[in-house]
Amino acid sequence: MISFKHGVSILLMLPLVACVKASRQASDVVSTEANAFGLQQSLVDVNNRALFEAGNIELENIQFSRATDDSFEQVDQIRLWLKICGVRDRATQGTLRNERFHISSEIGDNIYMTRDDEKGTPVSTEISNPITVNQGNCLRWSQLIPAFNYVAPSANIALHFEIRSLAGTLGRMVRRVGFNPWDMYRTNSKTRGFLDLTDHDKADWGEGQWVSGQESVIAALKGDLFDNNAQLSMRSLTVQPLERENQNSSAFNQTQLMAGLSDSEKQRYQTMRQEIENGLRQQAGLQINVNLSAKPFIRFQDATGVPHDMDINSGRFRVHMNYIAARVTEGSEKFLLSSNVSQITGRGLAFNWEVGPNGLLASVPLVMKTNCQNCRVELAVKIEPVSRGLRGVKPFTAV
Image (cartoon, rainbow, N blue to C red; front, side, top):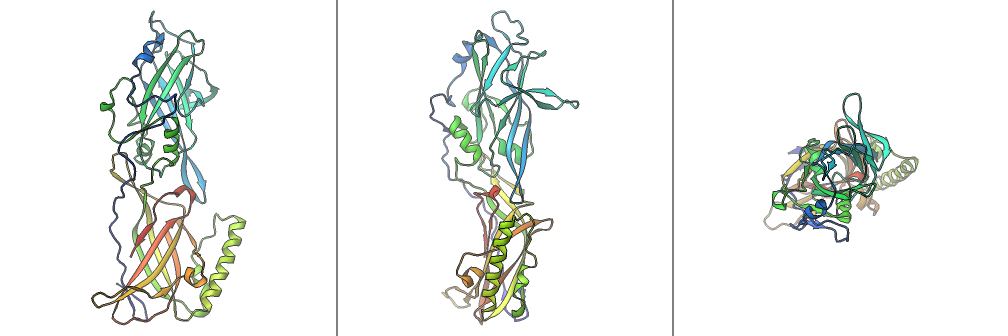
């Protein structure tokens, strides 16, 4: 129970966080373009026609690149470091050292040779396709996945790497690999879960939904293939209503952060603030600020539906509030006790609040329009992401 000096008791009831089911079919997704290899398609015939052979593709390292957008630090690219060893002539079993091969996948052929730095970590070189067999009889390369939405629904990705002899005399082989970049990032498990699936039956693959084919793979990585099941949630959420003097209508702006705004955004913000202040001064009723403090996080589901939580330490959010009440009589209907800035101005105005070191802090102005005796009073809260890096994440709501 929260009380303020005018004696109105405020009850904030927060529901338990619930898992949100993804609205996607249970069947695997495969693009229909002519050059796609189906998930059920055997690669034995393709690879038996090659005049060279090699072992499994291995993931040496994976790097998730970060970019800052709207003060929100997000992951937007992935780089894979891969290798395949035991490259040799099928007939003579001789080595193919210095032989060159062109490598491509559904992601494209933006392939670069790999070397080890002084710490033994794989790094990309400036040498692009074709890739040369090194002294260890291995092909080592890196590939950039240029668009990755880490808040998108988790799915298993199947890629087919075509390794084609540049001279044309050795033919080509195709290796199928599987991995889940969302689960790898969210659990910080780097190389765990990356598998060469070429010689395995579909029944032996990992659990969860699989995506294959250029169009579907790229759409899934961008977050455009499935309905998003990511849910914004809050830890340690507290609210404190405080009376605001009429002559101090700008007090609600004291915790508004301006950092990260462009000049045009600052101008729009100042104009919006003035409009809200003018509207508040003209309102009759008890004027209050509802101060809110919370630690935002996102609840995801992995490819098998198991939930995982991730804290959000940056970004902008829009906070909406209103008081609602119902008389303590059976069958009594709920009604609004307050007006928020959208109702006061007649437009969908709300401030964007930025997550800082202490989490999400907001101070929302409301005008109490009705005095209700013997009422049960509830505070309705809606917090929605604003940063583009959080697009598709479902807003947090509580009463």
